[in-house]
Length: 253
Ligand code: GLU
Image (cartoon, rainbow, N blue to C red; front, top):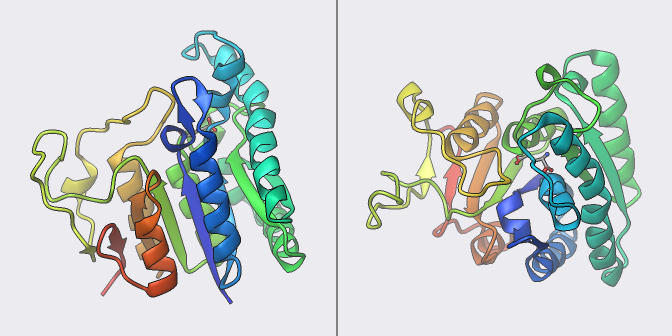
């Protein structure tokens, strides 16, 4: 069975100070369907944003951000658990930092947990451990984290469910007629030096962090599909019909 990683961002999972329950349910039902054909790992953001639903404190201060993540992580997992229960699927929470990818010992620990969860039919749900780590040990955005998870778990494809539909020839915020690129085979330094602009106050990533993730996947002989997390049709077409008309597939030729 092919192994895939889904990554979903804060802007998809939250809506005006609340967990976007319907979108999460759509995602969970997509995963429940996908696991008939693939081994599925989920990398989710949304801890800090979920924490803010309970506690209105200034997330810009380091301690407040950690507190929001620690309050929000169980809120987030509780929402996932309720929804996966509908499908009778068990989940495992796995919190990682950059250091887990840095030493053979640490890396093997989480690889074994993920392999063993999948072998037991459990969906591993990964987030960055924003709580007890120093900034140097953090990726800071889950785009990089998810690409590393995909590589180190030997997954074929990373699917990033985002608040954008894919990668455009030009910035679609500046030019609404910009053309969506269906397939990208190379990422240049110029691509990586674009303006970095997350669309949501709780999101850490933007198009550049997604391109970095795509480059990392391609450099490691894997692929990445970037598509909408609001409307999951593009993801479904890609997963079940191998069509990728309404998202961007990054892969080396
Ligand atoms: N780990 C952070 C959270 O769950 C999000 C990082 C990101 O936005 O990619 O809130």
